[in-house]
Length: 430
Image 1 (spheres, rainbow, N blue to C red):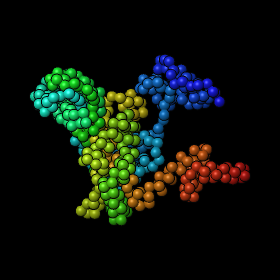
Image 2: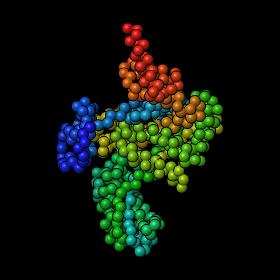
Image 3: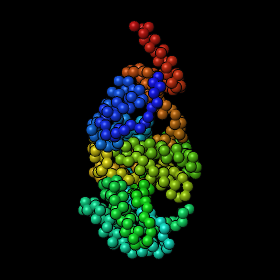
């Protein structure tokens, strides 16, 4: 073992090329030649592109991309790419969509494509008076904002509305200005942040305040995507299954401990499509969980009911700030392919597809919980991961996974023992 003290202070690290950075990291972490080669293999993302997407690049992390089938959304059949490392997520969407396909699939809508930029003003002696002084300048504010992005305005977007709030904080009252902007087919962070920064000094001058934070809000409640769907009793297994699923929803709506996991299940599907299309998973996730707490306590993002005919009806409404232009959606070749497979032409269409996937994911998770339990299907797929972790290769993976599931013991120690037995039996038979 190298006893030389290590230092993370590597002068000029960011100026090195990828190979140079890998060499530097290899010396620090004592990586061997095979490990260095693994980092250098960037897969289907060209290294020069990766090097310009983030800082200090030394490699890429490939996440499997699966295709969700059976989805009929607003009368249109779609194949949906999903990027995720978690077993059973893609299969869950396929199964949920299959069970409602013949009854029409998913119906979606969108509240609009508006994003909010916030400007924080502090040190205002007369906040209510300042609020009105700002509102009186809405026409001037519109001109200042729209001048920041003439292309957006030409495409039909731009400044739409001004909102000014006075909030109480532990430091005293603050005046918070909301610029509400139609960002069209862009997620819009750069556009609205630019407008907020351009406007901030003017706001400070008009009110005598100090302008501080100038940034978008990820609680995009002016950009809510909605999906609804009906699952026929005959297609889901009857009244007992429906009632068990409704009980699961009622639990989630009443208890934040359950709601957190309930909503995580929704986000399994949401985040997988957001990631596959090169959009910002962290922004969408932050908006979703903030929206789930909008009533003053954290609850379910989805709503479930029984229809007059006794069928199961699901509804999902949540912020969906995604785009088709800007960021990785245009830069990353796999993201571009994912959008082509989806066949969407606008950011609104993409948002509506994503929320339908989230509702499908929620249906499958609740049905599993209400019937066989979440582990049965999940562990059957997870067994393949355990088999590979134990060292299985090729045909051994599926064979060993089936053995683990049959034994009801999807564990590493069992996998290692069974793999050894499998290989011994194979060697003995040759």
